[in-house]
Amino acid sequence: MSEEDIRQLEKEVKKTKRLASEQAMELHDLIEDRLPDAYGELLGIANATYVACKNWDEANKKLQAAQAELA
Image (tube, rainbow, N blue to C red; front, side, top):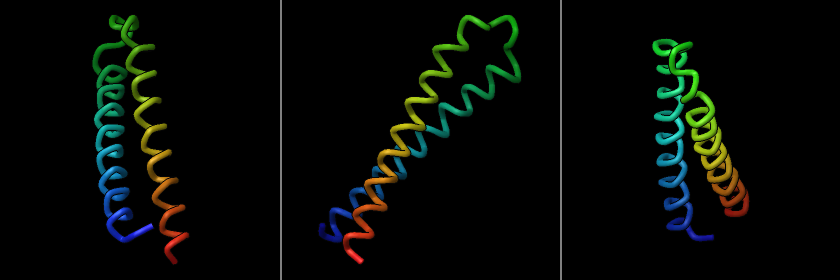
C-alpha cells in the first residue's frame, strides 16, 4: 500500500469516527432528554449507532493493517 492509500484510509477513519460520534450524541440525547416518552425511537437510534460504530471499527482496522504492512 502506498502512503496515498494510507492517507485515504486515515480520512475514512476520521469520517466514520465523526459519524459514529454524531450517532452517539443522538442516542445520548434520547436517553437524557426524551425517555421514557420516546421509547419507540430507541431501537432505531441504537441500531444506527451500532452500525456507525461498526463502520468506524472496520475502517480503523483496515488502517491499522495497512500501517503495519507499510512498516
